[in-house]
Length: 351
Ligand SMILES: *Cc1c(COP(=O)(O)O)cnc(C)c1O
Image (cartoon, rainbow, N blue to C red; front, top):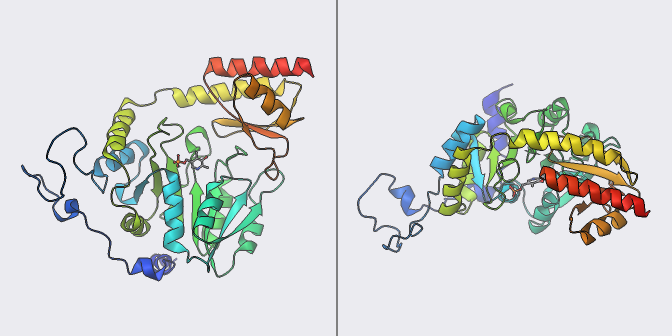
């Protein structure tokens, strides 16, 4: 493959108004050194821990995340949650009212919401009955105006990770941007596609600090891609999209680490899966590469209501295609999981 031509064709997918953009330059872009007196940004001079604008390039946090995850900072974009990256990619690559995006179903709801906000047609492609990736149907659904395809792996809410070979084939054969949302990758043995961005420059991998890293409240999402894409995302984002408070807390939590939390959640997930399978009202526990379990029940609405009456909230996915009768249950603390099982057994006895 002529790599340089391939890079050029990625850039040719960028909307003309974005390609022509002269990005906002902040005071901190004009002067990057260290000084004694800052009179350049119209900030308050009274120190209180947050009177200065944050680093718009997020260099300290990027290099720490890069170090922890083995990503070169030039391949890393940080957003106000993954949701910012999803919206930005649409705004960069897809012309409202003209282009379309393709997404799998059932999957994460934000692809459709962001597409609607950006006035983009979403072409939804149902997963195969065994929740595997319908590679042929996905490619057949694309036309010359399809700019982005969204694949979530491990997928929410089905819980399974897709075969790497299937994702690679999509990256190779799709002539637009392939977004692989890996919010749950830390719980999966299948591994990240992030090491394939050199091979497939149209690949954008999304990860997040919200799940395994325990920072959902901070709102920090990652996009991993070739530097050309990262650069455009950085030019289009709000200059100060991540607050100083969020960056400082993230650095603290990343340095503290999450020790054995992921292993514990995985072992709790497997225990929970066995115990759920023993409950009479549960017809099927789907295999999971994530920190949640999708279960098929006899009557999802009824079990959902019973659990919520007993103070336990799960996610009712009954109305999603291929998820009829299904609840999605996040793996909690061991004590929480025990209470869940006891409560479902109480439900079983009342039926
Ligand atoms: C939870 C989740 C995210 C995370 O979104 P953030 O905005 O980073 O919190 C992304 N994608 C999927 C599929 C998720 O389930």
